[in-house]
Length: 358
Image (cartoon, rainbow, N blue to C red):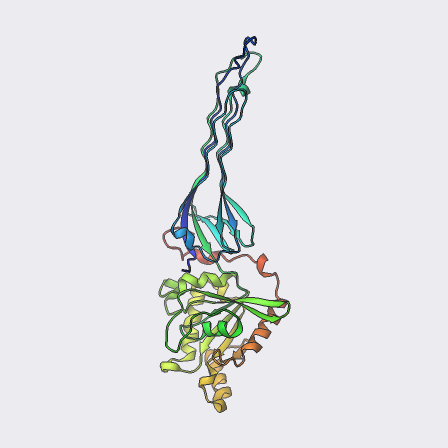
């Protein structure tokens, strides 16, 4: 299925029904008086989280959603029927923005969460409401009110505990395959992943965490170059970042330069995200002679001036991957709050929209 993580839709709530102008007309009941009923309320538009969805692709084909209108009132003080509400299913981790104001309307995280995005119009009043001791035959009614209408930007952010970032072909997808049951595409030729991949890593009978790889970043990603800018937002819900670099020197690439490039783009995109806890993962140690691995890894760490945790691994052979997963689980168990209680960082989006303000 095509991965889509941002769409714009229009929602229109229903109009309230008009009040009725009516007088009681029955045999042997002279001057029966007013009996016009109220109209029905217009239907509202709700967004509801469905855990069975993992993309916003359905909104590429349907972008306009209208709720039902309320029916007008009737005689004999009969009220009109309310308009039908409409419930729009969205995946977990959906942020909802008002396109015109840029306001964040809600963050839909858990299955079953719902958000009212367009309220139905209020019903009109029938002439029964306006009778009094001095006005026995009121001919006054009120019309139903129009429902709310607005353009919304839906933005999906993956609910992952751990995010893996790095240059293209650093081995991020291979790590997902090595530690989880997910099977993102990998091959023996260079290419860049086109959409994020999620994997559930199980480290014990009751222990697991969700890991996501983000398509490779390149120089200028924070200004829109490449695919990275489209997916950096998915790192904002994570509690731990893995910065992966290829230490093999494939095609003459310098691991230290690759590290600095990604770090610079991360800082440009969001200082808040740059300050999040990060671990350094040195991948493809299998391509370095065993006798030279220790010294080579130390040289790379010294060249970039890294002082945090370092994990040499081979995503291809699996060397060091299970130890990395175990250490991640230990760290996540100590971090609070839990994933479902985390709030996204929306400050980084000030300069990274398309045409709509954020």
